[in-house]
Length: 144
Image 1 (cartoon, rainbow, N blue to C red):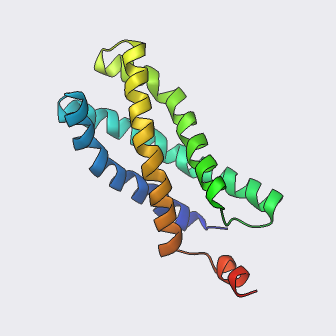
Image 2 (image 1 turned 180 degrees about the horizontal axis):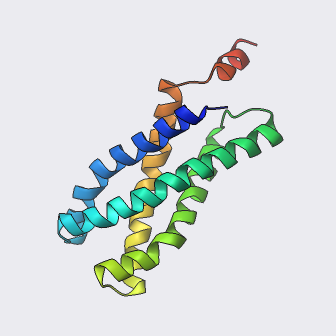
Image 3 (image 1 turned 180 degrees about the vertical axis):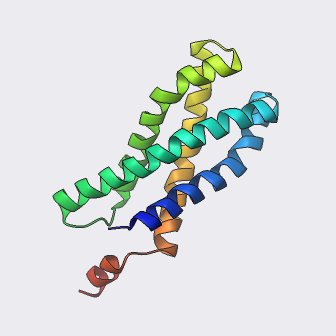
């Protein structure tokens, strides 16, 4: 399983790279000034960073318990990303509505768009992260 230090590196790098892509893209798509989207992005990233750490820790413990390891199949990667984003969707929608002064329905549409972006981003980020920083246990299983 990943160490605490590795999980912190993962969470922080995920959010920094995500914000660098998300902020200008969302500003352009929704026609909202970049500074307002930036605040939404930073608050979202802060909440998501804590959620990222806790979620991945719990997910890995469950995988360890039920699968005897933490290497994810493609189906588990998809489930992992979808469940992560659903948790954030529930927490972030009221904040987006309040901060941007939009209806809950508009916030839901925006939050779903954000979640779809991060769903795809999370899938590819985690795939790349696992390839750049593989765990020794994965190499042992490949050799066996």
